[in-house]
Length: 326
Image 1 (cartoon, rainbow, N blue to C red):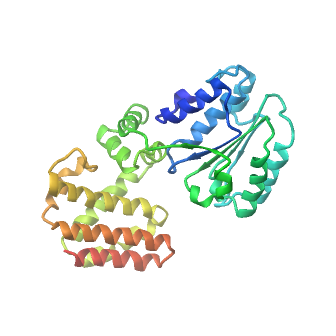
Image 2 (image 1 turned 45 degrees about the horizontal axis):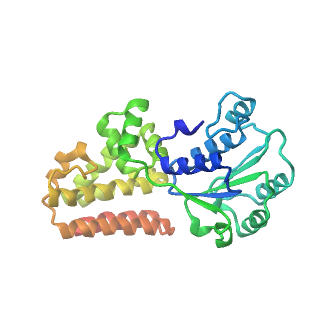
Image 3 (image 1 turned 90 degrees about the vertical axis):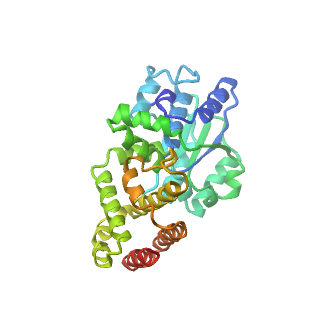
């Protein structure tokens, strides 16, 4: 892993390289951005560069340090990750112990805490003490998609590196050239995942994502025809796919969002479901205010489910309400 293998994030990478070149590397960083953008990959490439024996702005990929890093078996590199949605107290305690000892074979020790917002308050306070008086040889990188869950006192002691969605064309090219996706599929995924390289790759390599999408589009067609019996009988599909319900409801949202765009602008490049334009055209008889109401109902359902409301009742209510809007 090095910077050249990363799609996008040129500004963040350039900032880090410039700091290495000028010798102005911060002891602590916050890598902030939505899940799946590539924050972790940049953090790993940065850590590998900092530990490289050549001490350039790119890892040499040939020294013993780079070789050990590739297997994540470097004695001066530490990666802390959550387990079951929590970074355990013991992991933080081990980090603090390791901070106190000098590097084993490099001039630095580098610590990455992935999903740092999953530390509890006790863990964050322990990290804060380290950040207040860091030894010269350490660099700590906190990766997060939720800075609002991290203590303000920690944020104030870290340099913030922000990550933004990757340009859709770059993701499309990656999926076509490296994962063998059709251009129409790749374009859909790049837009659907809102510029998330990681999520795009995950869906591109999924065995059933596009099959689910087809099933949802067929269900939408049934709903818009007013067949309540078939709509309610489809609840089994939702129960079978509870773990990806957010993704499924997003397919609903993007469909009706595209339908609204089609009504206003016709077959426009902003439409995400470009490969399904005939279906969208067929559904364009629905009034705009009704489409807005359906979008609102789906968004409410997402919020209810996130708030641990009754799953089946939430879905059934959504399906019935969608038909009542027609």
